[in-house]
Image (tube, rainbow, N blue to C red; front, side, top):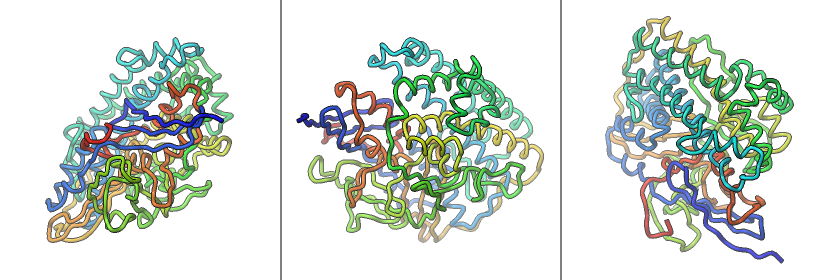
Length: 506
């Protein structure tokens, strides 16, 4: 009979603080508990403030997805004030959101996920020396190149929004910036340089050529079809993924949620990839079936979180955030709440977007071998190939029109509204209630809150807890499989929790 033991794995290279309790049975994980180790409390900071304060304070929740939080806060106030957002404002909002996503997708892949390929457990693997040259922290060739290029692409947010991070240029009814011809030309120059770099360094082909890959079989043919593809960062990822067995790791819940990415302007030459008013469609995917997302079906469970209330499961409009730390006592073990859609845990992020879109490559891969670390990370690093050209077209449309960027909005005295967007890591929502010109209630559900959620009252594991449970570990003293699985979700505990509690095994 194999010996069971419990271990605690701290996860570094995470935005925030995370540890995972694992219970081993021999060399197999039979249970997993994901713990966010710090309390955030932004919901309580927002109480009794003026409605517009959310545009200044909530972008500070995260230093990576700062524009995404601003977008969500602005959309909630658009709804409350019944503001009509002009098409040019929608284009500017979308362009800055894409720029932020481009930097995150590339940086996470090169500077966080792929660093694990240099772990000494792989020193006898055929890819090891190449991994050292590419992904050694600070000096790896791919890492240095990615830092330089992603720094430049963020200049687009600075040109259109005044600064990055923590800008507040989005307001109810539009944006406060009015880009001139020179601003648009600068943005197009920055984007053109980034696209050229992305195609050469990451893809090894043009975005248009990559977008012709429609199946797992196409993917195999694509890798071997030219030296530039084989030696690109994507080519190396495919070779590394095969050797490391990433396609057999991290199945997860097999439920996916996406709120829809990029609001479509009313008049635009950009063709939506779906039919729900977004460029990437919204959808809740379960058992391969796609359903429209209804925000009324979202609730947060706190039965295993360090919060207290008479009700353990509430819609965010009714949600409260009352910290109640019990240490290791009882069943509570995380500062993250547990979001559920129609009672189900759900994965969010790039793979969820592709599944809601029913992208033929990713549906083919998931149907053949279930969701995995391999497909999850692949979706992230190729996502820019679907958005760069859209960004360029919206810049052209701004330059060709003299339409407004702002329309006046009604006073925000009373009402409720929600802003639901797709941040780089997945679905982000702000739910706001205003009474007598003050914020009465503010609830934020960030992407990592979905992915890192603890158990709920029905005992259902969160997405990456589910992805870890059942995983075979080659060396329990160096569980590289755990690093691969958790990092494939691009964890960000800064958004999920925010203030240290030193009384409990941090």
